[in-house]
Length: 311
Image (spheres, helix red, strand yellow):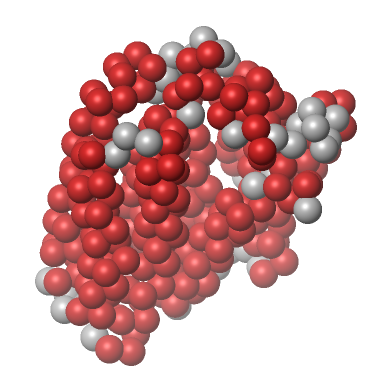
């Protein structure tokens, strides 16, 4: 169990579920030919998960002192797993994930796609070793990697078809790519907010380690106001998106789903964020945003089912 906790198995499961929903709950329901076969796609998912898991491991290695201040009961590296063993796990996961990524790129005859895996791995390493201590840069990096885990599905199953000439309906492919981009932007924005909230939760330990996170630089009160504005912007943007793309298409079941599982929790987050001051409250709000991201990706399946069976 300690190894599962080390790689944040709940977060990895969320990545797997997101990619499965995007492929089989979105692209597959569009009745388009998917470039990768089922087993090839499973290798793509495995590569993504292994690189993400490696990122969590190197982050724990570098964060040992900070974690002892912030969450001493959950520390794994240095306690139940030695630092040397953690490094071995990191290199094994990272190398295996990279090799799988390279193999997938050779299958689609697009070795340039391998840069996605290189960039993701490098960003996670740089985040853990350098940029986590830098104002906002670390928050942006983690959120960007989350967005890439969504976009990579479209890169391999859509762009591969287009560039290799196996599918000719460019207009439809362009629309599908834009939809994936919309969801990636949504995931990026919410995860960016969540990372700031997590920094608010860990302000004491981060401050002791000399980090320069947003709460440390601007204080909890001012950071709460910033997060409040970002949350309000996200909610308004989401309502506009629902009205423009779903209400106009009379996708009422999808609208109801989004209002209940996305807009509602975001409104609660905004109200609670305005007065949140304790570590427990910030932890709860961080978990809430994770669920909003999950239901946000799941909503694409609801939209497709609404179009297919109810519209």
